[in-house]
Image 1 (cartoon, rainbow, N blue to C red):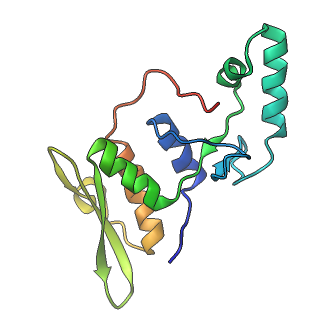
Image 2: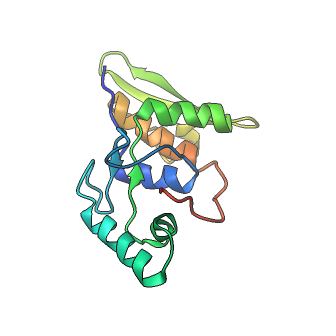
Image 3: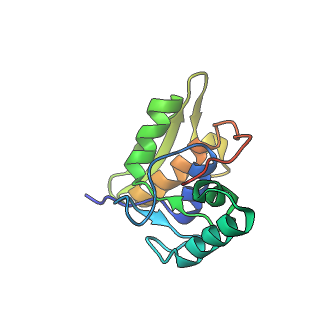
Length: 154
């Protein structure tokens, strides 16, 4: 079984939708740096935060909030799937499309709607389990209302 982390794009989208957990090089959790590199170099981000702290005479936490160079959480696919289900009652379920080809599709069930991916998109999403799950999670996140203010990572 793979414990694959979400893509950089999905990581940024989940951050916008409110997925929070400790992030950073010392937290033990995966993250993307501002360039989209998994567990990558964050020295530029740290330098910018310290520069903002000194320039604006603010706390490092406040400087991190102002810093345009962000780190993003990189949860495992199943962690994001659990969060969608437990926090937002959005269920992203995988369905075997073809046993012979080992291809899958996803089905999203929300509180008031049952949306099959093939009806919501132009074509049914078919492919590798983890690729289809990522697409389903991205689709599921779009059901969450957009946040009015960004959530700080610091």
